[in-house]
Image (cartoon, rainbow, N blue to C red; front, top):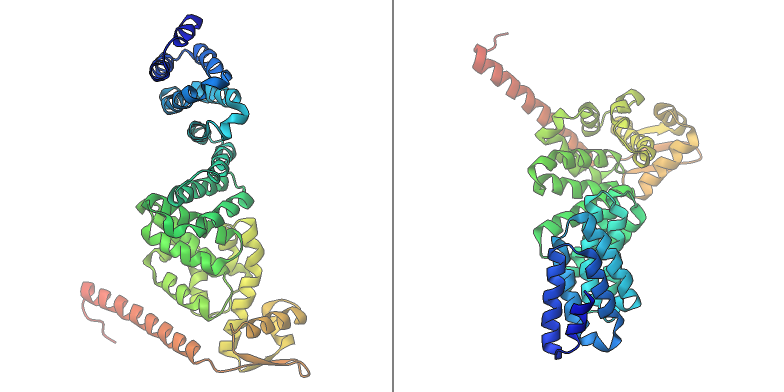
Length: 381
């Protein structure tokens, strides 16, 4: 190797670059790791040969992908060590390529945190170079996805927010889908269940066919955890009427929410067993809010003592929750604190929804009757 290095000294710059690229590509093809390191140490160590080193290092970085993953990973780390502080200045472009190769290696090994960390370093480098916004958005989405796979929600959220700023610049359909998945997941994790339900609903219609039911399930769970009120009603109705919902283990609970029936503790057991810890924290409050809204369909007024008994909570909790729902315009009503009574005001929208629900049930019954008649003949009294 030393003899070949010495021969390069006597060539002009153009020929030295060509011969150096040819030499290093040949060494990589033959997987001669030690000789590659020796050659690069000489090349990078000669600060007077920077103009030669840059194109050679670029050739090295684009050729490393042909190596077996274990050798690729080991050699890439050694090259980054050789480049040292000059990696982010003199040899920025090959460094970006090598780090992305390392990221892919770690991703294949299931080391998602390390994979994300290497890409994050590239974005940091990219802030000083003219990286296209579409490329930057692609990397942000990939980093967010990798951190999510390692359940590092804080870092995932950080890069998801960065990607959101550049959402309109995302050109690749696959990257846009990944962004929508990351965005829905972060909304869910952050307790923004209503917006998450809308995003999951969209994914249940546009994701890969084998994934659509999964996102439908997520949409249903999130809508059931969403704050009770008018904003939830439209999507709840849509999800209930989706034929896929009938196969869910907690369909009866979804039906009670749709019909504005009171929900009891036993009704939520099946759902609770499928929830993650952060979702279970919201479940009790979601059920309470729904039951207050359901009570408003039944009673024109009720004392807080009676409401607390109905909900299975103390009086102050019932009053606080009802007051919050009224203040947030999620329920029409007035509170008389002196008498300890809440009055529910007529809600034309709720009555209209109730009429629609009755119509749906009648339609379903008629469909069943028609099916029986078609098979067995007309029914007689």
